[in-house]
Image 1 (cartoon, rainbow, N blue to C red):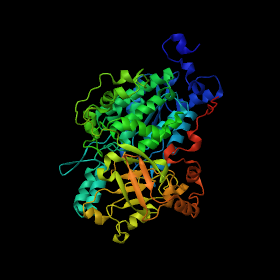
Image 2 (spheres, protein in one colour):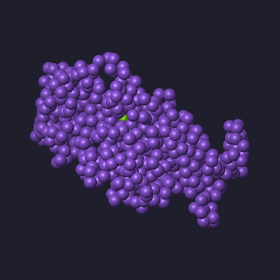
Image 3 (tube, rainbow, N blue to C red):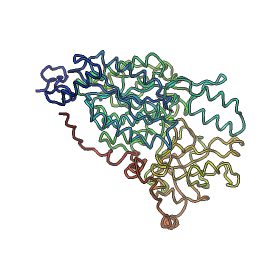
Length: 582
Ligand code: FES
Ligand code: MG
């Protein structure tokens, strides 16, 4: 009989905690672990018999989005102590979206691997995962899902609204916009220097509905955060209270052994897709959710996305697709308000870390501003903002965030202008001799999971300066890259298989007509099959880029965009043995 059965309260006994094997047995090792905990300065009564809660922190000096997490970890630990647990903070790999090259996406799986192995190899009964800047959320959750311990996510929270000369600025989104204005000669260096100070003016992740806001909302929709956590601004005192509540809750989850596998079900992942659609969220969420679901043994496909997204209206009026920022979203009711408006499309009977059912969790949630969080009768767009495209140019799929594109481009045929890599594109895009017109279709290859490597966010290809000066602000662009969630435009992304892996993108030549038809979900190279076959036969496969190190591991095991870019040996289900602690 388990301790939980004996007491009838659903709780394990201290002897049933995983950490008991480290601290509570009679052996030499256990003696040593206790002696070393004395060395850390703790009394026996401070920790023995209590659940050990690992606080995994992605704070570092190079991540401006997480600069408050060092201090916020103290609030998490306060909550853990208050609830009778023993908190231990662990620094984990910091993925700083802005600074890490070629892209933090190259390292998402490294963070996931580190998270999984750290949780497994130490005396951990439960975990609080602290992240928010783009890839940190999926990286932490993928690793924790594989370790399958009780765990909660503490989202970093969005930064405050940006400001410049009376304008409200969105980090990312307005960076692209004003950079184009500078290239078009509309603003100068003084304005740019002011913008540098106004775009991102507080701790926290990007406050548009970019990848960070999308993925933290995904975490809340999956049910792995304190309710309402994901939209609280990073510097709001409510953020500290949420962090303390997460610490408290982690202790309870550890006693109950409520593992992530109980929460991260197929229903939960479907609800996360529904949420991304209603938010008009980032295209990156597709890759991350497929990878996260894979860790939970749930097969989520691009077709699942397309089917769900077609049925869900965009309700969140947030940039880049809409008008407002995350601060406004929070004051309007945040994710609980949005989920309440989506209730008839969600699986309400599934459990979350905080409640026995999602129904209970969102009961009574209110929306305070119908312009920020729309009603289903007055949506921002009648269907979700993302479409999955197929055709001879993307046999395994591609995606477009059509809600953030100029509508006249959503059905378009034009001549391709091909760039083999991003450096060449940057060096030559403004060259008038390329003959690029507003009707051209810009094609960038060599930027996928292998080619990039890491699928850098090159997908919003720059528009040539001479067209910007004519007022052109959008064109059809196609690549095997990703795009920042704060970007916009008629950009076809994640083309799979990528050119580097011999995908048809490698066969396109400048001048070939290419058709995009979002309504028909079509991406087609208008060249006959016999000619494509000839071109295919003449292709020389690229050589491996990395001779050693993490890059070599990455090259050998990375999967394509349509299957989530996880490592093949991590995406597999299967048991991993518990370490022997004696
Ligand atoms: Fe960190 Fe945008 S740069 S979330
Ligand atoms: Mg981003």
